[in-house]
Length: 234
Image (cartoon, rainbow, N blue to C red; front, side):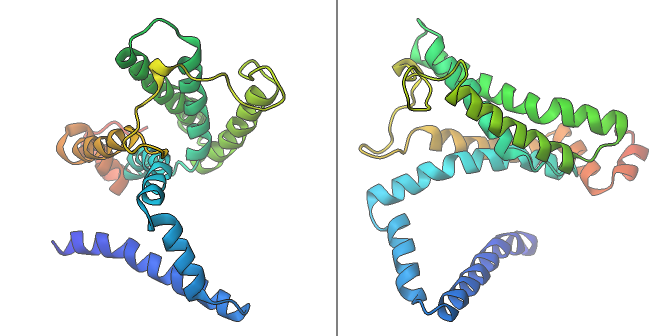
């Protein structure tokens, strides 16, 4: 119980400290922190539309966080989530506009699975092989792969094969069969929030209720001890 309380209190204290530091900077520069924070919280939570759009913006952050959380539990510091997010998004978008004739359930599922696989392969193949065979640290390799992914995505949308004809750098329109429905009308909030929350439950179950999760956490806590216990540690 005490560990749970500590885990919940840590991000809360971090947020409070960040707000206090921000208020101090605003006071030093002659601005009113009450007015600034009032506008900040009003813009994020001040209405149903604002709150819905805030939740919509949180969806990719939740999913990206889950993606790196498993690695963190195993002691791997994957900091290339942004690049993996770009690659996964591009793969899902490509499926969304290029595959025709599928019913919505299959089309959406195919886009999601393709995005997951693309992001996972991008973040795992080269950094994983580099760490396993030459000892390259994953912080460096995932960071480098992230920059490559971002610029590759820009090329694909601005001058590459995924650019829609015209002057605006954007992809072709995603087909309705690959589009998630809205949870709240006239906002950006979709059923992706439900998927993200369900993914949180699945990842928690994986880490704390399965043999694989136990092995990952054991390696993250002490790789040498885990190896002596019979766990295969590269």
